[in-house]
Length: 168
Image 1 (cartoon, rainbow, N blue to C red):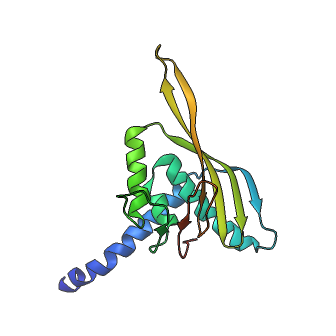
Image 2 (cartoon, rainbow, N blue to C red):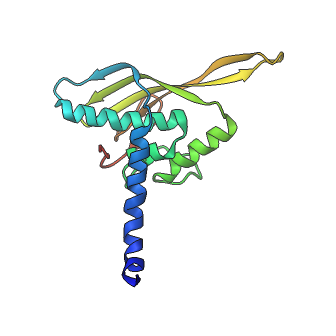
Image 3 (cartoon, rainbow, N blue to C red):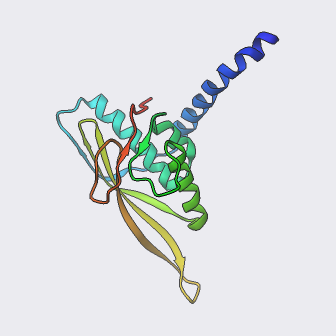
C-alpha cells in the first residue's frame, strides 16, 4: 500500500490528461464554413492541425476547458495578453470564464479556417442573444476575430504560439 501512495503523484497527472483527451474526443466539434488547405501538406498533417484548431475553437464556443487543455501545449504562449491576464493555458481559460459570466449565451462559429504549413488561422464570429426594451430576443454579432494557432500576427493582432501542438 505504501508503494501505491508513492506512485500516486506520478499517476494522477497522466490520469487527468487521459480524462481531458477522452472528454475532448467525445465532444462534437464545430465545423468551419470555409476551409482552405495548403495542397503541399500531407493529408495526415493537415488533418492533425485541423483537429487541434477545431478543438480550440469549440472551446471558445462551449467553454469546455477540456478542449482547450487538449489543444494547447504545455508551453503555450499568448503574445497579445491584456494587462493582468495569466500567461500559458490559464490565460484563455480565465478569459473564457470571464466572458461567460458577462455573456452567458456566448456562441461562436468558424467562418473561415486556413491551413498553411505549420499554421492554422481561424476567423471566429461570436454571437450573443440580447433582449430589447420589449423583452424580444434578437441575435447580435459582436465581433469577428482572427485567431492563429501558431506564431503569426493576424489583422486583429491576435497572435498565439502553441508550441508543440497536441494532435492525438
